[in-house]
Image (cartoon, rainbow over all chains, first blue to last red; front, side):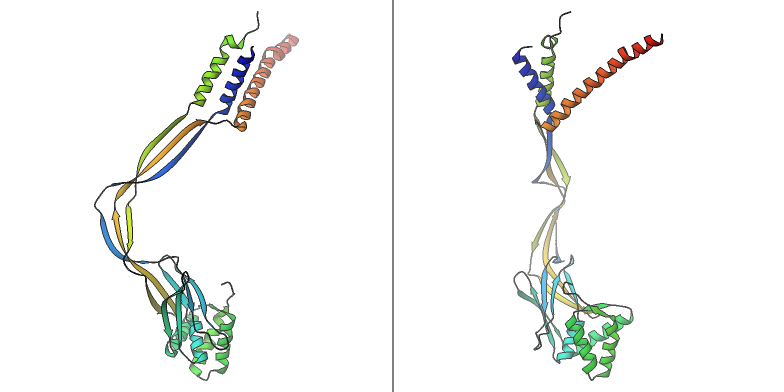
Length: 175
Length: 125
């Protein structure tokens, strides 16, 4: 067999052995074909994935409530008012919780908790605890609660706090 | 009988024909219309924050007023398919040793059938 023939044979064999590659992909276009009339409506929608920071006033001993909250799909965030109620009762003044948008630190909402609100919160937590609810508080908040049980003069409030105390466990820093 | 020349036997033209089949490049695109409503959402007002106090908890709801325009429609998708020649050593090795293995196994089969078995038969006779 001549050399060109061998070369051709090898080339053909390589091509044959190489084979083919088939690549397929789908391209998404911006072309639409309407099928019916357009409908328009106005609605209120919850904003999901929004980070908020709720802060209360800082006390002289350094106690402060700071919570980082994240809105769910329905645009809602929820936080326990028990620590706020404890702060109101322990320091003897109303507490204004400030909600700030974390992306730009803009103040978007405030919530005022008075002494009367604080007692309502305690009553609600007392009922929940009787129903078997458990909750977590940060170590500083637990200290505040224990201090209130020891020092507060008001008997009905102490009763509520004493009833709530066993249902409370310590909340970790990362929680 | 003179040795058979593969060139005369047409092996090379046959291989070339096979390679042409492999090399052949092709591309096509298929239009697919898929039902997908066209939805435009336009924010009408700044977000509003409302609160609800219940069961010792505070729930803050963040909402915005939006105008939703929905048009039932189909969206065009293009499915492309492209076939091209590509050489890589993996597929070359696979084909090469595949052919080699076939030839060897065929040779062993022929040897066993026409020589080994026949000779055994002769011995039995």
